[in-house]
Every structure is written in structure tokens, then in C-alpha cells.
Length: 185
Length: 183
Image (cartoon, chains in turn purple, orange):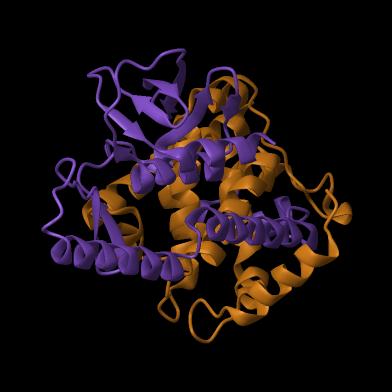
């Protein structure tokens, strides 16, 4: 009778034909290059974007300071500011989701994403890019369903580019919808 | 799947440019450890396609997240990520239906070994039938040769827990194998 101590030798014999070959390596490299490419596409190369955003905000602040004599139409609200190398929004999309525990993302009428890598990316886009928005109840809305591995499902009303939760808090996230559409293409 | 010329070039660049642990390239890590990752995932899940998917996820994560791995700890990182992924899959209802409903652990012996492996095959099958928490420690300790301390660190549990799981897993294996022998 074989003993657990022999598991290494036994496995070399019983699983002799189960090896990580070149075709699996090709799959990995292909998938990694796609992931890297899509990261670049979706995150729009952060350094130049951040430089541009910073320059625009700086210009806006200077303009506001120098044109104080001109009466403004209403209060100016800056939705985001720069901290280090990330953009911090004044109110983030619910970050209770663990991107690694999402099983599927469904936009009613558009389709369902079940690939774990793509689900992760979509949730990250929501968490990184959704900004609070003011909008009345979304008209002609469909639904976004995020299903976790545990089976729990979170439903949002959506009407591109807006999302609304059950408490009627609304976010705007055109990046999410364009990312979703690209996956569906 | 068809691989385009452009994709291959990008992939090759990633492969050659990235040295995850400072001294070992992706290529070297793959040739040293990918089969171990694949076999551990196969023991865990009992399904070849899913084991390949787990191996793919682990190495894609290595290439895309680019962790800086301590020298000599590369295999521990790869197996830790693989076991986390296996656990996720195991928990999902899909695998419970498809794999638990159809226990399909299959051996892949060399052609000259076919028919000579009943005994060894029983051990592999018995390991595959263990509960995940027992399977993990048996695979890491006996198959991959990690110490109790290393396993405790990899799984995020106390050393005492690893030891007791090992002891219970050994008992279960003995019972299983004796049961097989009696039949």
C-alpha cells in the first residue's frame, strides 16, 4: 500500500502525462498581453491623464481667483481632486464589492460578463471612475446586476452613463458602459 | 485558438523583460513550477480543464500584477495564489454540481506504466477525495515538501492547526486506502 510519504514519487507516475506545456504557456502569454493592453486602454495611461487633469484644475483655480469680480452663475463644485497619483472623488461608488469575489456582471439588454478577469476589471472601473451625480429617477432605465461568488446579487438601475442604487444615490460612470460595450463586441 | 503575430511579439517581450524574483525570468518560473501548480490544482479540483484555467490565472496574475517575489519563495507564492483560486472555484455552486456530481479524477500515466499503477492510483485518488482543508496540507507537505511553518504562513493558519490537519488527513488516507485494499 502506498503511503502519503510517497506522494511525490507516486504523482510523478500517476500524473506523468499532466504537464504544463507550451500551448498552455502560449495561452497565458496571450491572455496576459490582452489584460495589459486592456488595462492601458481602460485606465487611459494615468500619468498623462493626471497631468492634464492637474493642469486643467490649476487653470480653473487661477481663473476663479482672477475673475472674482465677475458674478458667478452659481456655486462651483469640484467633484474630484488629486492626491499623490490617484484621483480621489468626493463620494466613491460603494466599495463593498471585492472584485475577486464577483461571479458575473449583467447589464439588462446588453449581456452578461462571466470571465473573472473581465468582471474584476469592470468592478475596478466602477470603483475608480464612478462619480456622484445628480439626476432624477432614471427614465427608460435597465438594470445592472452584480452577482458575487456567494450568490448574493446587487441590482442597480442604469441609464448610460448613470447608475442608481436602491437608496436612489446616483453615480455617473461612462467608462463602465464603454468598457462593458467593448467586452460585448 | 489562433495567436496573431503581433500578440506573440508582445507576449515574448513580456516574457523576456520581466524577472519576477529578480533572478528568475517568467520563462524559468514557468518551466520550473507550472507543472507543480497544474498538478496541485488538478488534485484539488479533479478536472483537467479547470486545473489548466487555474494555472493560467496564476501565471497571468504574475505577469500583470508583477509582484516582487523574494528569492526562493517563488513557488510558495505561485501555489498560494493557485490554492486561493481553487478554493474560490470549489466554493462556487457550479463546481459543486459539475465536479462533485461527477467525481472524475483520472490518472495520466506514462504508456509503459499503464496497468502497473493500481496501488499508486489509489493513493492519488484518495488524496483527491479528501476535504479541501486536508487536501491542501497533504499536498503542500508531502507533494511539495513545504515545512509546517511554511504551510502555516501560506495558508494563514496556526502551525498547530496545520499539524492537526496533517494528522487527521493521514488517518483519513489510511482508512481510505485500507478500505480500497479490502475491496
